[in-house]
Length: 292
Length: 277
Image 1 (spheres, helix red, strand yellow):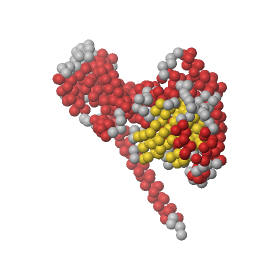
Image 2 (cartoon, helix red, strand yellow):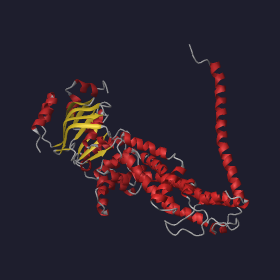
Image 3 (cartoon, chains in turn cyan, red):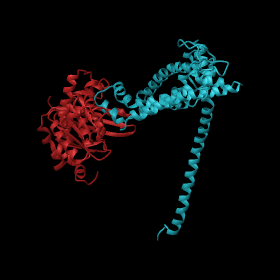
Image 4 (tube, one colour):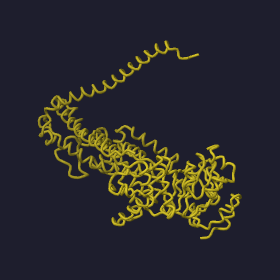
């Protein structure tokens, strides 16, 4: 006796295929919703900001008058900030990842640490701001300087970099390590010559994406209390500075309507920087990714 | 070095039927395993293994999956320690020094004992850099010396003629069989004393397998080789001695002809005649 009755099977077949189509449409709509919202937002910002976006806007300092307001101090300030955040967070993050993946023994304490680093990536940025204010600005007496803000931002993105680097290191096949150990190499030689060369594209991609998060972060800067109207450029790591998202935030909350357009222009500058960084990350990923 | 009398007696006792074939050799012992036990956590992986490996011979280790043959091989260069839950007891004397002793550094051991793995695992680097990897980690920087080592090793692995014009190309562009011979060349570059091979042909096609087997015959003139294999015909073809492992124990260890023609143990006979395994 056959259990599969042809007429029933065929009847159900149409139903199953229809259900598949319905789900496909639903998922497509979900994607469209996000994309359309983003497109509308972008369109609004571009139409609002494009008129203010010119060379003067890039080379002027902040001003009380919308027409004269420029983003120079904030743009340069953000670059200074990155000059601190990039080396500090990448060196600490990659070092931690190497320790956790290659050296640390697999025991409960280390598992607990591993798990909590991922959790740390989910801590709200304002909490890191408070930490930075307490430790770097006050206890270490760095003031509202580039260094204090840079350290704070480094802490903020450190978990993201650690997790990305851990994943990149884990993706290097064990056979590769065994080949190296099998010839009498030490752990460090193996890491330096086999693991890191293979993991670096992944590490860099993750790091750049983390840095682009740091460049757009506002909350920690607000908590630290960095100024928004500066008429000079930073001259060292301990000097005061302002940053792009801070400047945009300040413009956006002003009552005059003209400043809304200035803010939009500022957002365009920030987004250009972000897109640039993300393209570099994608480029590195595609160009150097090794396949085994 | 003369055969340790006491050790010899142990072997003889284990293989009563074949006393003569063991005693008529006076070859040097490279590895002398004494009462080796190994645990993976609670699993008793190797049980009282006593085995001597002789110089300039090919020693094959056969047995069904999970019998501990690969584990034993990896104990010979302590690669087994990469699994953190492993414990061992007993002794493995390599050239009369116990390698399981804490003072014996794995780096030193693995410089003298090279390994070829189941799956060809060249580095994603040029052929040249693959071969020069070993000498480089041991501090050789002189380009001329490296060039010579690379050529000598590639010739030793019978692959020089196939790759001499493309030493700067990525080793991943080679076929599986060529990659495995590159790995053998890479292992020769550190000028080892012993070469451990963990099923080196299981991922290769028959023609590449044949080439590797011929190579093994060639290499035993200068090296002592221990090879783990699933393929009994292979063991019969290329080895001088064969050890049959079963659930962590050495059932029988003798000259290869004896194992394949007149095995002393019923289980050996059952295995080689394909009744189980």
